Amino acid sequence: MTAGAVPTTTAPPTRRRFARWNPGLALGVVVAALIGTQLIALALLLAVGGDDAPDWTQGAMIVVADLILLGVIVAVANRGADKLGAATLGIRRSPFWPSVGWMVMTYFAVMVFNVFWILVVGTGGATETGEGTTELTVTTAVFYTLAVALTAPIVEEITFRGYLFPALTRWRGPWIGALVCGVVFGLAHFAVHPPELLPMMAVFGFFACLLFWFTGSLLPCVALHAMNNALVTGTDFGWSWQTPLYMLGCMAVAVLLLMPFARERAPKPA
Image (cartoon, rainbow, N blue to C red; front, top):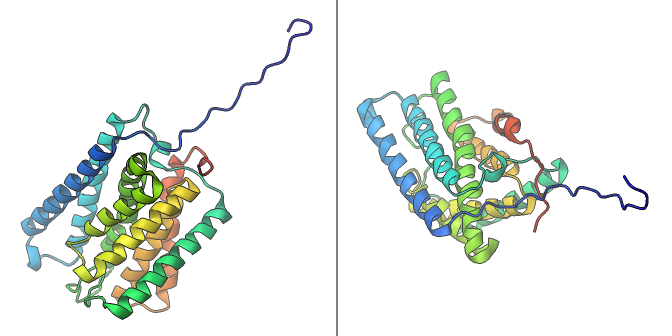
């Protein structure tokens, strides 16, 4: 360095909060992929016996459909991103306690709506895994846990919050983007829930988008989604004291499956 020269510092690279996906294309791809994977799952289920197939096969078909959905979303997202990585889809590390705080507030808001909705409308007598499960075996519990409480939260959060919501945010900002994404998320469950429950799914999707927006990370969304699905699944299994442990276990496993990919820190909220 020459005398009198001013030392320079290299500014840390700025992280783009969201990839610049086309909102119309993203919405069309997600809807088409959801319909296509549902049809594939139904065809596979019919191929193995339909209603006469073992109970665990429905869980296996959910896993297959979700993995196909994930592959489609990643392939399309890769075409619309400069450099697709886990962080591009929101898989980033976020501060623990602030994330827990946002999760608590999010779930409280969802539960307030759910209680109100159930009191006014009811649930239609449906459960997460359906009414066909008559005998709980170890195999059935394992496959439904893998499908409903682990695979579905990860794949759905990547699809809706990691890919669709950022694209919709470019269109009309985070609030309208969360609203549209929530509606699509609710409608995506029409094949497994009666119409009475779809608004509850939509509200969960809306608040999950806001959770992603304020934390900058998909991990709190995955944790909350896994915990919620485990609560419903454990209740459907007929468990009592086991359900809270089941919820914590599914939440921890779902997050741990993504942690090796979370190599960047979440950016601060815009």
